[in-house]
Length: 265
Image (cartoon, rainbow, N blue to C red):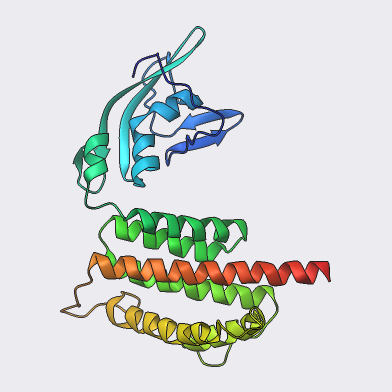
């Protein structure tokens, strides 16, 4: 990579799955330290221009591992990317190829999942966050059965954490639909819209959540696999993670409203 790097502007995104912040420095976990003048410390310009980071930001894939060297010299540092390896395809790749790869999730899926991940992390819904991360990674790796299982588990964990945080008892029945009915009561969803216009939509969610639970039981791997497990398509796996993420987003936002009212009151 040339030392004539484009400097990122203040609001430019430089995120990368290989970044790490440590003791006042920005660290690249992929940097190969093979001599006295090599380092794993980077700067925003290197991260902004690195093809591995561009794949992560532009394509939404974190399966890329670069072979990269960071060289320190008087007055600064520069980088040299020797190759990019795709963990999924197990071969070298490029930014241009990654932009056309059919293994990458749809952009809408990335946005939906990113929203709920942020809310889960900010709200310290740690077990639910772990579930959605595993679901996302499973879709990326082609493990669609586990993606279904983890997506539904994320929704279930989110509702359970809401109950625990509000000191509300869990329902006696263990079905996902019963947990939703209890969550609807605990979070007072019926009080959101006095006009009643959203009542039918909320009622309809019971059926959606019931079918999600059935999807996990039949197509997921939560209960093991038989000799001839049913084939799970990528589209069904994406539908599961999108639906669970959308429902989870709604539940967390309502939970935050309830907590704010408690603090104000």
